[in-house]
Image (tube, rainbow, N blue to C red; front, side, top):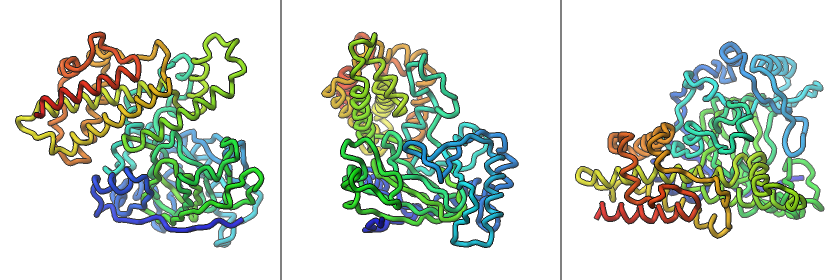
Length: 474
């Protein structure tokens, strides 16, 4: 079955793209783009690439041989994804090298040697090798709430159920991918409906994109099952809308970075032996996408186990556990996540306002970013209130404990401040502050109980923060 390709993804030079332009043209409009000239100084593009432009597999095997990684068997489907195998990096490189030897001399023809094409995916390289700086995240992609948060906290507050997982596998959403020519990824939209960026260290990829307004066309009539491979014969009875889809295409060259916006389904092929670096990330511009997905998945989870509601000791807790297991976070996790980010942004905004004698916050791009963040979080909290989400009594954020006894929160605040100082090119010393100053900054607009126990509490607190900031900036 053929697909209709109606356009190509725009390509721009990163040297000519400011952060404000990137945010306005691509983040806010949720539009994909390919960006060049941002990876030239990466260590990975030196160490991991041979003189002929192909992956330096000997270097990879020598330096990272014992890492345990997930490898997709691209020829075997398992449920909605490719079958996953676990092996060491050395074992993967050996199989890749052997396959390359067998395919040698058969350019542009896939060799049918009875062996599957393997694709190393989702390798948490940064967490596993923190002292090996393979690359620096380009400033355009640094407003990354997801990985910034996970550098300081674990996502799941329900430690009894969710800290049993391997610490590396749950630790972040920064990945390395490695695969030979012919390896591929089935049609999907990214986790949490996050943004992603993917940089080719070496090799070429072909991307096929479906705009979000057409996403329902690749699902069955119940919106449960998605098309697996757009180039196979798609069952018209099961997926009646697929024939109406129109696609955008891109050939991503070595060194280029592709920005994948929220909700854009995509299918990807390695046209050459390829190594790429990939991040999933989110911020104020796509937070509503995350909330929409979580609420939809929560309602689906609730419906799927409705028949045991009357016999369950805590049906709500069971729904939350299932949601976290299936989606990666639950409503309570999301509430605590956004509450901590809101609190950090309020502290930073107050720090800015208190420096008004030497700084005009109204003209500061960083201050405007903080205001945007708080406004967005407040809107999401209003949606949560309307939906009746987050009702568990034990989900709350104690402000005094957070501000006085939680070193991770201070670290998160510093990470947020440094990030915005860097991307907006402002002075970092304007946002660094001592731990003992945090509580006074918050107490001016927190209520007497000093707790955030519900979305309504956070809405009220942000309103008070905005009022205090306005008085200070007047």
